Length: 321
Image (tube, rainbow, N blue to C red; front, side, top):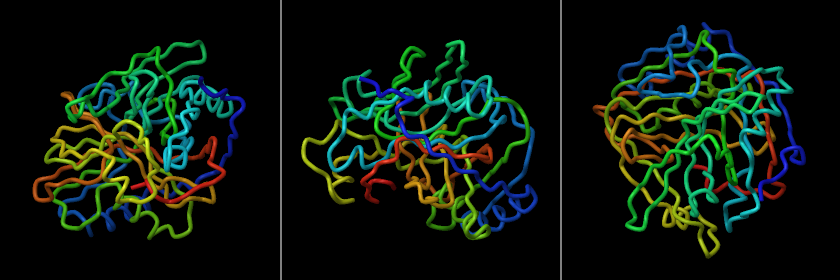
């Protein structure tokens, strides 16, 4: 049974929005420590509803908001199956508080296990309005009976999500967005980690949140897909990695998710991106495995406000890589 959205604890936090020029300089400097070729600019958002991104709305602008619900403690050491949320309802409640007439929600989380009768990854990409209209271009990824990765579409009638999630929420409008291009990885950090650490190093102590989408244009990415819920408790990273199923997934991959510079005393996940391909691939992004040939192209919005929903009362720090 889906949890009642109005019964969930909603906590809010104002985020720091850096000056565009300083943000561009900080990211350019930081990313060049990890990639040979770097380009950072603020540009008019292209139409992201077309190929290859296929978002449910065309843009990333309009009341940019970072949303996190649930958390890893609801999955580990043993799953709490009652932690089943309605993503559309949560987004509409935020729309009401933020005076938004419509929303685009993109991001990473646990998929609707009740829909596919097994644990799965959610690659969320939906647009909604208060009148009930929903456009879904969301996907789920699961491990099939042959231990292969299987990607499925999530219909507009299915807006449930389980356990945890990290969503970038906006009105899906056009406007200025942050565009980041990187080629040839020379360091050890992945694309998102290097963005996050570049921000936290330069804007020390500031609460910054980014969300959006990136395209792995060339190369491969090491990604996991959760198998069905473990019947035995999981307590360590080694046990987690034994339970997860890992794949090296080829480009093109389109990823969606969020990052924040610190936990802000809200038990936040610092970064979380899931990706999908036009074929059968989908999963949780870890890092690329082709540093010499890898190429990233990302579009991001800078969050103005953060919403934390149903924060776990008892927490732990594993299972967040």
